[in-house]
Image 1 (spheres, rainbow, N blue to C red):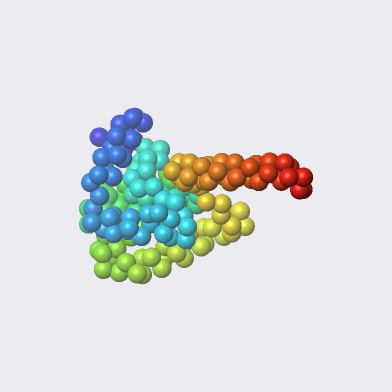
Image 2 (image 1 turned 45 degrees about the vertical axis):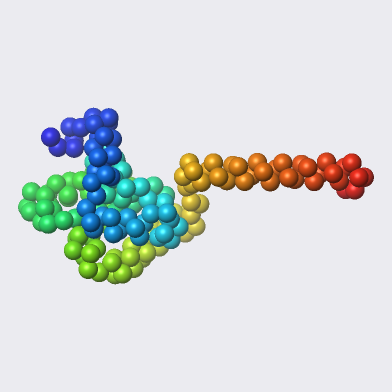
Length: 166
């Protein structure tokens, strides 16, 4: 069954399954992209977009990165990839593709190309400045730090008020 026919729940289950079954080139590239290692950008892996699952997706830049193995080098697969890229383009998503052997043998060149694309895309977003989207863990961590700071500040203010200092 093609991805066009998958319903949302099935597509999400497929994406989760793909995350656990990454190819070696996808794992190599994920090591570069995860934890905001590329220009501070947050990427998701095996992320559903419409009826498709993107290998890597950056919501801040609406950017998909694909790692294509040899199975993408057939006429049928190229036509499918073209339809998929056209679908994503209509939604404002930029697609960057690399061959899996390129990721494995020339990762430094791949990273340089990704940094160039990221710079170009970010230049079109809010005048070139990005406000990074925080993960839930980062929001919770920042919230705890902010709460602690607020408690400390209010304690300092109380002490100053009690001592007559302002």
